[in-house]
Amino acid sequence: MPENEASNRPRRVMGFRDLLLFYIVTGISLRWIATAATAGASAVIIWLMAWCAFYLPLALSVIELTSRYPQEGGLYVWSKKAFGDFGGFMSGWMYWTSNIPYFPSLLYFAASNALFIGPASWNHLQSSKLYFILFALFGILLGTITNVLGLSVGKWLHNAGAIGTWLPIGILYFIGITCWWKFGSATSFAPSQLVPHAHFQDVLFWATIVFALGGSESASFLGDEIKNPRRNMPRALIIAGVIVTTGYILGSVAMLVALPASELSGLEGLMRAISHAAHKIGLGALTPITALLITISNLGALGAWFAAVGRLPFVAGIDRYLPPAFGKLHPRWQSPYVALLVQAGCAIVFIFLGQAGASVYSAYEVLVSIGIISYFIPYLYLFASLIKLQREPAAPEIIRVPGGKPVAYFIGTLGFVTSVVTIILSLVPPSEEPHKLAAVLKIVIATAVMIGIGVALFYAGRRRVQRAANSAR
Image 1 (cartoon, helix red, strand yellow):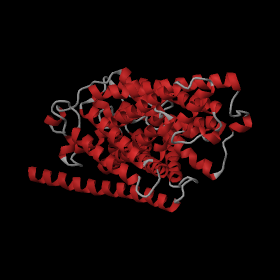
Image 2 (image 1 turned 180 degrees about the vertical axis):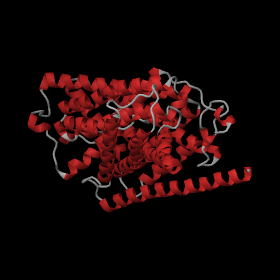
Image 3 (image 1 turned 90 degrees about the vertical axis):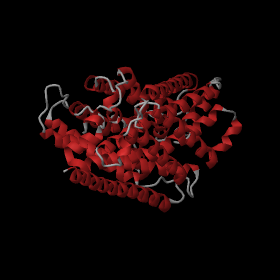
Image 4 (image 1 turned 180 degrees about the horizontal axis):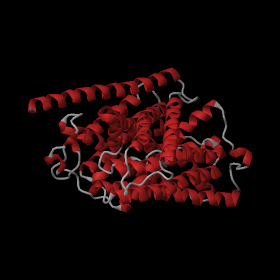
């Protein structure tokens, strides 16, 4: 890397507390609590299975890989070390593009729940495409501005999101306990009810639960902006992992205590459960407060993910595999502003594409599926990188996977297989989708276009690098 570029690195502004809150806000999304609860009491076992098959392998892999290569770029750097420039670029490209449809889907969920802040007359907007589009545009604008101003400003949105995540979960716990004490549980948690169903549609739902446990790798993209990353990142990741997993499981249980699974849905199910149960126990005033907190939570999550993945085109720009403008930092705020602005523009395109010829619900489901598939392709690189990089010697300060190489090979393989299965299951549309073929075509075409653009950009960038090297001789 040229000396002047190395000196133009962002400042280290995130301490342990900021990092822990960042992991929490990117690691847990309230919408997946509602989605998981639709499976009934078996959601508890499904969460535990997904934790063992995916979260644990991912967290252990990230801890070792971050310890080996703590610099900015994370997954991009690990894949590049293991599989060369093409592997690094494609893993980073797909991770970046996976979040482009993720942003609108996250904002759709926030928009749906925000309607509970106001009176019942607002509910007609649940089917309004214009409302969802305008809300999503507002969220993208907020995430862009706060992150262009730098992490010293943007981190406060992330921290507010973490607080906005846990206060609603605390309210949900309180409501669940109160409903159980006054009326008993709306759902049976008998041992026979805890066994997950093996029906095809139920198995498809598992892919979404695995997706919900992703995010352990998020802060690794900010390596150069984190204070003492080798020490703080593993500690924050372990603590956040316990908090996130516990929150998902107990949140699902509390929701099912308040409402039967048949009355829940993934888009606005969390607020429906809280609203119904709060009125049931005479605390209807909790509904708008909780809705406001959930809205803040999702806006904070968007800001955090916007910050993390915005660093990927920045690093690729430094490597010259994207136009050099992507590698520029703002002269005042030290943020990768070009990468962030391009990311915002692409997200806006997906806001409108997702709604093309679809209802709000269908658009939401298509965006989620596209996001899951393109998000898990980089995980294939991540787990394969852990396996391949076991060949490299580990310095004493490296934090290895407990058990050394044999265990690293096992968890890498387990995570890789889980990721492949998740990608396959995400191709199948839900049973409620009225236009299944159109939904599948949207998912496949969008994913293929993302991959094709990435390949084209890589080879164009490589030719640019070669020409620059030849002219310098």
